Length: 104
Image 1 (cartoon, one colour):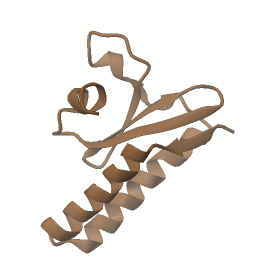
Image 2: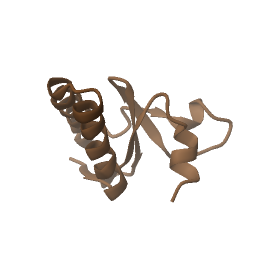
Image 3: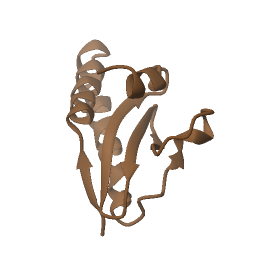
């Protein structure tokens, strides 16, 4: 069984997603449902870390990042035999490449 770790940035993403849906969209039920779905989507990675697609299927540059799609979000992660690191939870309309590679 592989250990799944959620990065500090990914935890911030979850808080931002929850706040946006809850406060900006005034939909607390949807915020709970989306956050629960995102958390549930990463659970199978403990047994099948290569479940997601390689990001380099979408971009012309080799990268070790993988991603899963859940609701309107992409879950980006890095995997090795011992650990899966959830790097970011990003909305599909966000500039994911900028968020992953340029923002610090």
